[in-house]
Structure formats: C-alpha cells, structure tokens
Image 1 (cartoon, one colour):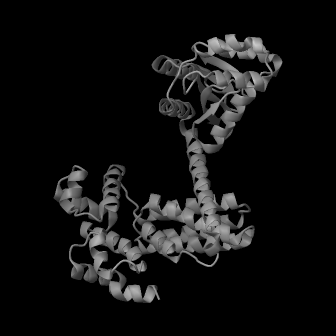
Image 2 (cartoon, rainbow, N blue to C red):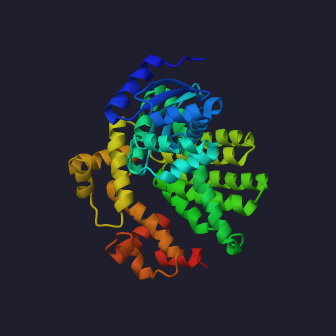
Image 3 (cartoon, rainbow, N blue to C red):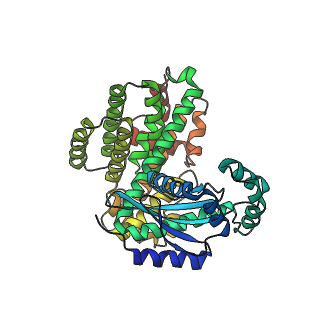
Length: 416
C-alpha cells in the first residue's frame, strides 16, 4: 500500500493554518490524530480530560472522514463537544487513508445552553460548568458561510495531496449528487402519487433527446435523473423492470447521439460494450451510475472536438448559445463573447462542430420550441418569439426543414 507523504501533508496544513488562522490536523484511517498545526483549544483539552478513556472524539473524526469519502467532498460536522469542524478525505488507491480536518470553531456566539447540553449528555459534574463556559468563550467564532469556504479550501489541499487519485472523489461526488436528485424526484412522486403511475412524462424523453443532440450534458443529466426517479417509483422493488426501462433509455440516448451528428460506428460500438456491462449490474445504485456514464459518453460523441484549445473556446460558445438562444444573439455577439474575430470564429465553429453557426442556433431553437408545442396552453403564434425567432414564417420554414413537418402539424401529431 502506497504510504502517505507526510512531509507534503505537514506543509499543506502549515500553509492552511497560517493563511486562515484556524487549527487543522491530519487523522489516520482509524480517526486518530497523527499531526496537528495550530493551538488546541483549552475547551477541547478539558473535554478530553473529563471524558477520559471514553472520549468520543476519535470516533467522531472517523465518522466524519468516512462521510466525506462517501459523498466525495468536504464535510462539515459538530464534534461531541458541540463545536464545528470540517474534514476532507484522503483516498489513495481507492482506499480511505485518513483525512485533513479543520477547526474547531463556533458558528454562533457562545451560548450557556450548549454547555448545559454537553454536561447533561456526558454526565459531567455540574461543578465544571463555569470552567467549560469560560473556555468555550475562547473558541473562535466563524460565520457559517466562511466555514463552508474554509472546508472547500481544505478539500482543494486534499485533492492536491492525492493528485490523480482525486478523480475517485470526483466520481463519488457525482454519484452521490445523482442519487440525491433521484431520491428527491421519488419523494416528489410520492407526494403526487395519485397520478404518477398513470402518467409517463413522454415530453421529458423528448427534452432529454433534445439536450443530448445539442451536447448539453448538464441539462440532460437533470432530466435523466427525473426519468430515473419516475422509473424507480413506478416499478417499486422490481429490479428487472427497472433494468428494462433503463435499457430503453440507453437505446434512446444512442439514437439521440447519432441524430446529433455523432459518429455512427463509434456509438454503436459503445452501445454494444455498454450492453455487456449492463448484464453484470445487480443493484439499483450501480444501474443509475451506469446510465449516467452512458449519458456522458454519448453526449460527448455528439461534438467530438480535436484541438483542446479550440475545444475550450467552442464549448464556451455552445454553452453561451444554449443559455441565451431565446435572446437576440448573432454570430458577432457570440464571437465577441469568446474574444475572436467574427470570420475566424465562424470558420472555427464549422470546423470543430461540422455545422455552421446559424444552423446550430436554429437547431437549438427548434429543439427548445418542441416543449412549447407540447404545451397546448401556449398559443402556436407565440412559440417562435419565445425561443428567439423574430419572424413566424421563418420559424415555420426552419422547423419544417429540420423536422420534416410544420410546427402546427408537429403539435397535432404529437399531442393528440
């Protein structure tokens, strides 16, 4: 097992302490403190003296570190002494090796109630009240927002220590966030459960396809999470039904990537590879993680950009278009946004994406207009203006060119 580079860790902790003025320390995989930088508050020393061999601090550090490892980011927690701490995990070779920790601090002004609760919870003699209260007043008070930034700063240092291994935490953070979003959607479904089993959000599937075709990874992920939440709620504990539904979503994603201009052979090859992976999955969590990986890969296939420098510029332009398509944007305004001349940006855009600027903008607007066509409450005459077309007839012409039917015909056939 690769040893921790304690010299680098000490250097990082010293720098953190000097810059922030907050005490910090390193714990091992068992929660034991290996090294500390800064003064240990007298309140903490007295708490340890009073608890003796039963001091719960080590277990508290271990629990917080493991929680941080689980969610893939820093974790703020209250120690048994009632003080705020934060921790950033260190994972080497996919194994939890310990954590960097900051604190303790108070996130509000000292309160006698806190001391009374600590005395009561740990069965301390009441004669210790005055001393604990006096020592608590010496613990620094840091507002919650600053504590959050301090925790994020510590996490940056932990990632620097882990170097390439930090990608493990990044993946865990994404997985945890996805699970949280899916759970939120399930809870929402439970609240509106009278109708959820009878109604499948087909319009969300169309929106998902639209996002993938445009290479909008973030927007597609949000919608996919909602669809997963619906699938899990509707199918209950039937894993095979859920698996079949997720398989349908994968097929839909692959088609969207092809329609968006992705390489057909590459996508079909990935599809075959992912099918083999899917057969090995046996938990809902692994299934959700897998389909998110599929989504990212297929979305990346839509616009595979070669030169990394060009990639950043064009991705920035695409993000700007996706965010502002409903406004009056032009080739000139977007080229100004990415600090390129209009002619060079136009050539670069076509070279990297295989589609010229105005065609891409029209494609985005048409895809977005579909969700308003699905909504019968929105007058057909208003749709063009909502998505950025200033001329109704031009919108109809562009829509028919891309979809093969007029907006009115699309609404009639898809919203019967």
